[in-house]
Length: 165
Image 1 (cartoon, rainbow, N blue to C red):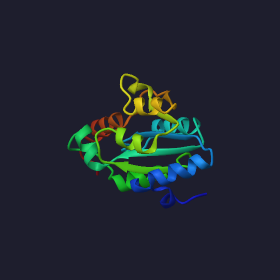
Image 2: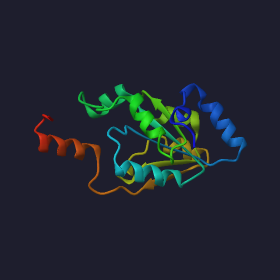
Image 3: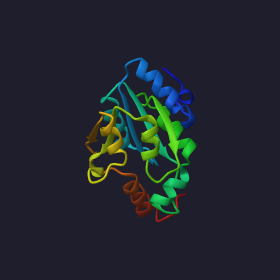
Image 4: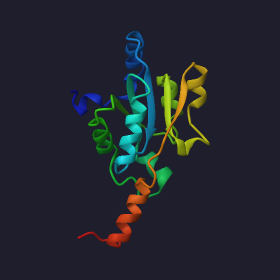
């Protein structure tokens, strides 16, 4: 089993990794997200994504990107820790961070064979055009009902009233 640290990928090495995976005839799957407060819904989603090919690469929004998308109180967990936790999952092969609001740039560098997004994103999938132009496919993953980071935050706030002792 690989160590989580060996799964952390510098973005500058993405094309080199992709070339090696191409020469090994590996089907590359990509997904992305904030992954703040990892929960069962995330794990099921990532496991589903991994089953779509041979290698799963996960793009993680940087802290700045999460703040722009979710507001000043997020993320709750810093990007290095979020990446390390994701890398510890057996179904995840590589983790790379991105600072943009959307992963289209990262997707154009990687050009995955399969792009996986949650079914809740069916209305708009960043990078879909890039993947499909290169003969890849987009797969919508089923979502675990009633489980989300926002729901967890709301529950904690309701139970503890903003103060945990």
